[in-house]
Image 1 (cartoon, helix red, strand yellow):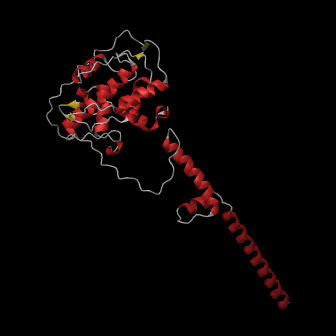
Image 2 (cartoon, helix red, strand yellow):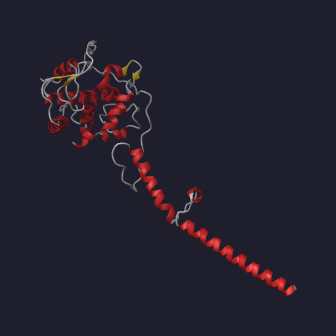
Image 3 (cartoon, helix red, strand yellow):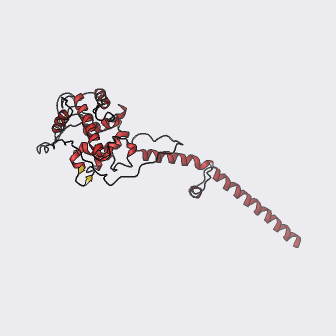
Length: 288
């Protein structure tokens, strides 16, 4: 009787061991195949990843990268560490005296105007691209500030923001053509630079806008940035930073007098600045 009981105990022990071994093998096999949600969550805090998690993690990361990139494809992976960004400048730098006169203020929009109108034929995108490219290539301050260059991506993005590259559009506020130049601004630029730009000719309109951007770069560069005329996006911590590029974009839209105030530099139109800054890298027009 005791022998039979010991034999039964032994058989049960062997069966239990086999059962446990089988469970362990099924558990490790499930992990290798990717496992369930609980296993993936537990593995997320670990420095090791098994083969099953790597494929799902990779596809998830790709999706997140594309979402973060917004317009355009996700940036390619790189092992090069990003360049350090400058610290945000929210306080206006001190102003230095300048003898430059500001353009006259534009007249108020026509209260009876409800939509833009069009004058003449619209130029092709190829013609517009050539006009804007040529305008950005001009040195507008050849004697006093030959280092000033108006970036092509800034010219293209501004034209797209202002007119959608419509060469023949006239807005209710009086803005004309590709760069939506106002008549008082055109008169100011022609007098200041001894030019004879035709506001309604699309090539001249592109040069008027680019020339005005060059004037803004020098004006604010001299007044607030110690004659440093760099308008690189790398100089700006973000789109609201009081860097020269953001200040120039804001002044193109609202006028220099709205940006250069008795209290120092302000950006009264951050939404506009953000749009143009985003278009400088994401605009479909950059591929035309």
